[in-house]
Image 1: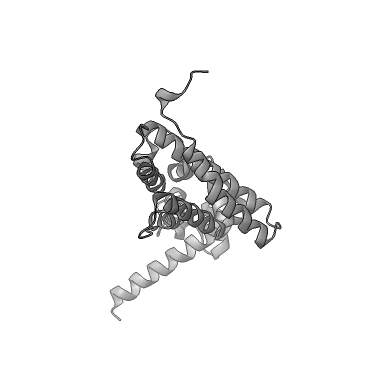
Image 2 (image 1 turned 135 degrees about the horizontal axis):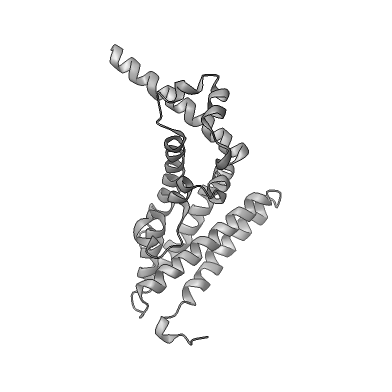
Amino acid sequence: MTIEKRRQREIEEMRELILSAASSIISDEGIDKLSIRKIAKKIEYSPSIIYHYFNDKEEILNNIMQRGYKKIVSAVSSVELKNSSPEERLVKMTKNYIMTALKMPDKFMAAQLSKSEEALKHTSSLFKGAAKEKPALSSLFQCLKDIYKNKEIDDDTIELTAQVIAVSTLGLIMKIIVEKDIGKEQRKRLIDYYSEDIVLRIVNGSKTREGRKEI
């Protein structure tokens, strides 16, 4: 191995050590409690060393958030069921999202509950036009478009439907994480019922704005 390759490997190993320590702090204390000082203490280095590998805390946080979000995006966008209906794809997509989030409960909760600007860059999804900017929501939006292809439902309503499904799913995930002692069987029943019944009710209950009565 050349000196250059060895040096590059050492850099990557140190970056991973820093990111691992930061992830642990986030899981234990939340994103808002993360600091360079705490990371340095955890890896037993001086804070100045960390700045050799990352510009600041925001860059560290951004790396961690990107990794977590990529897992979610992959779980949602990788659903390609041949010879299946869009509804079946939606059910599978929803289950994949839930199960992926439940595999990283502490990080998921810390990210979703954080109000920091860096975290919100990844977790916000309720603003108008989010379906065009957020990959996971975009996959859900496209699936709904396929379901509604023979119906007169405008894109704004489809995006709203996608956002409602996303935030409803988030609520279920967070409650399952908090009430962790409900048992595997009950957890599965809740996930199956939500994905196979409730989500499809939300979808089938959507109407065009023109068809709604003003309240």
